[in-house]
Image 1 (cartoon, rainbow, N blue to C red):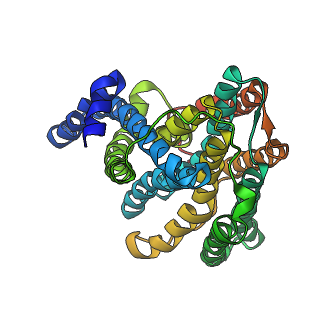
Image 2 (cartoon, helix red, strand yellow):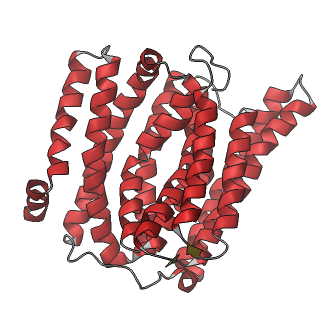
Amino acid sequence: MHHLLKEIRHNPLLWMLVFVPIVLAVEAAAPSAHTALFVLAVLAIVPLAALLSHATESVAEKTGDAVGGLLNATLGNLTELIIAIAALHAGEYMLVKASIAGAIVTNSLFMLGASFLLGGLRHHVQEYNRAGGRMYAALLLMATIALLAPSAVADLDPARGEAMALALSTGLAVLLICAYGLGLLFSLKTHKELFASEEHGETGGAGWPIGLALGTLLVVTVLVALVSEIFVSSVQKAGETLGLSPAFVGFIIVALVGAAAEMAVAFSAARKNRLDMSVSIALGSASQIALFVAPALVLLSYVVGPKPMDLQFWPGAVTMVMIASVTSCFITNSGRSAWFIGALLVLIYAIFAMTLYMVPPGSHGPV
């Protein structure tokens, strides 16, 4: 605990942790103050992301970048899962699908691209183990193909399309979870030597004890989940006040805030020339959302939702996810990166964001 208090005392960014109890108190006292809750939630997530970054780096020093990145991506995606379960319970299936698609695109384009860009501005050329990146990109591509199937089946027989898409989605959910498990077995057990980290990064000095780091990870992840729930509950109304469309809010803003904790770790690792960890977090998180979070939500919808949810996304979302998946496969083929590659990925993401931003605020079609 001494290490944690010392870090908070000497890091001005962590002084913003005061916003965590403030946003929880405001949510309890004035739940209808959506714009205020939106701003406070963003201010609260920033220091939580920084604290999570330090704790995850401490764990990575003991376990290695690949396992450390996997751990961070898993805990980071717990936030999206908790938010999505709450939305499922409320029957907000379009919000769930928008957040899933947005998280995949945000992680595989913006987080990966910004990591390449920030790392490349400090290091001329960076190298990473391409085996991990290629595996995550291949899993993501397979999951994207699975997202295309329900829409194709629904179009074949409009009369029975909804029932057929739901039955197919349930079967695909089981297959995707099996593929995710096989990927973990392959990378962490049978062929783990292929995914060893490149030993050329900065270690950043002594980290926290492993017990403190793991405890901090768990507590901060729960706090991020609580604050993110408040953010999502207020962001729709706040978006209307600020003139943002539901498509932009669900696909861009919710995804960016939900991944803030993971981004803090990925960007910090890239600046320290630990690109293996950045790639593992970005593409590992995207593939986990596609292969585990999305199918798990389909199965959970039978229990917590008013009716089962399928994997039939609107065409624009599937197109963006497919482009992001193919681009990730192409980019990670070399195992080397420079700042210009990252800039291109960020620009592709900016094109998607600009397109969704132009959707009229009163339009609910895309989501």
